[in-house]
Image (tube, rainbow, N blue to C red):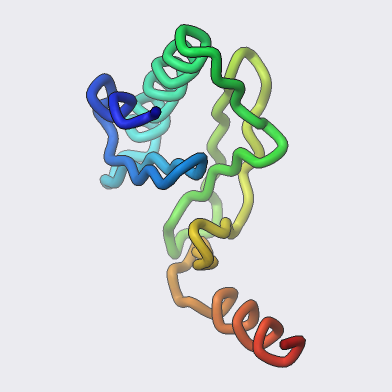
Amino acid sequence: MINDLPDSLDVASSLFADDSCVFRYGKNLNHIRKCVQKNLEKISEWCDLWGFKISLEKTIAVVFSHRKDLDIQLSINNQQVKVEGRAKFLGLVFDSKLNWNEHKKYITVQHVSA
């Protein structure tokens, strides 16, 4: 149902059933933020057209960098997107430093509770 969504985007994407991820990389954070924001607007318009609803409770932005002073603001339908230091996508926990420490903690807890 969502296979035509990436056709209208100029960011990379990963789609699996109702889990979606868009991403952009580069050195200029302001340029990346503008590009991602523009694409969030395209996604929102596409969702409105096809009757989908974006869950802002489940929507998370993560800036992957070793720098500490990065601030980014994104919105969908004039509502702020949460910016966090990690996100779980398709069973993997991606942390902002991409060092996999958060994922290791996650699978250790999953293994212990099983």
